[in-house]
Length: 168
Image (cartoon, rainbow, N blue to C red; front, top):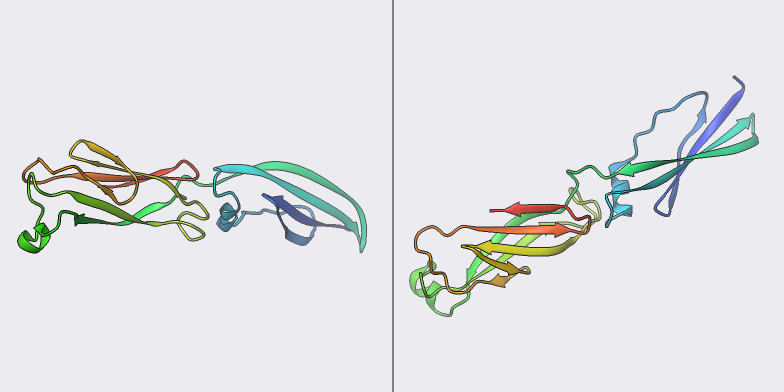
């Protein structure tokens, strides 16, 4: 009963104190912001150290490893998509895409980097599927649009953790 403990962690090169003056037990929930330390992984090993004191005298340190996992909801997301006519003069004349004349660029903006919801991950790949055409890269330009009426598309991103998000 006269012993106290200081709990520390080391995770992905970062160290910190979890709690000091712990008597016999302690519950810790790692901060979600720690996911920023592993932008290209979904989990990593965390080492927890327990320094035991009698008064102010350090008696010893024990350690244990655990795995911290990034929740599946933490990923880069598609924020918006802009479709733009690339054939000169069509948009000014018709204010619409024209069958057999229009070529469309598909450009997405993404929530990524050291902000929620991606916590460190960045977009590593972008693909667009429009009327059966599959295009690689943000800002890709379609072939001529041959389908009349409604044309559907899906922009899919993959982030550095291998997680995907789509916008249709």
